[in-house]
Image (tube, rainbow, N blue to C red; front, side, top):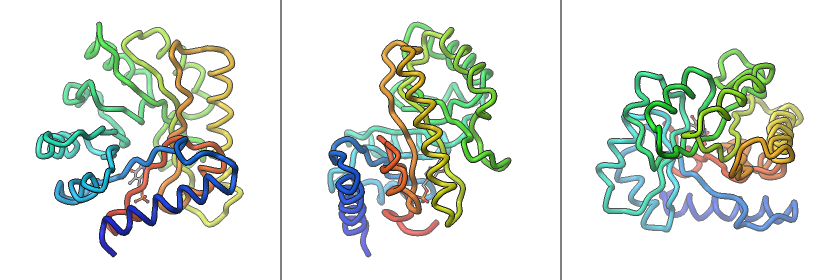
Length: 225
Ligand SMILES: *Cc1c(COP(=O)(O)O)cnc(C)c1O
């Protein structure tokens, strides 16, 4: 299938998942994950109205931004960011992977006097291979982030376990939602938007059922990597 057809099918599946749980389709943003694929693929999706694109490497993101600067795209960095690469981060990018205090410190010095929109990534599944802050260290991280005014926290991000065990997957998504609800109830971050970035090609309907506002979908749109 072509990228336009895949995009149309994914949009229909998002709408169906929203309908099943009584949510409006507008409440879920599709972030098309274009990592490893050429800028021409991004352009094909953009011509079908896709605006949000995700990459997991900053250098690749910046290459595609430059190649496609004529198009009005919103870029999301969804992969781990090394502190020595913070200097490459553009102030318009939305960072989904703020996961440690040293990164918060670097973001503050790079964006002092400005705002950089971030989501805090939480390792809800507890797998050693997954990035994200350990839930036990979440409170220490949010205290450190709250003390750094350049960081505008929009919400939280997680990756569920890659498993057919739907209960385990939903448990991770529900845990992220609960962390976010607590931040919102406490008015912990000024301007907190309650975004929940969760759900990929294999599990996004479950994420939508648990409240995802941003689903990050790659292979279902652009094919295998
Ligand atoms: C690659 C990636 C995705 C998309 O994965 P698919 O299974 O291709 O949809 C989503 N989130 C993150 C953090 C990724 O690295």
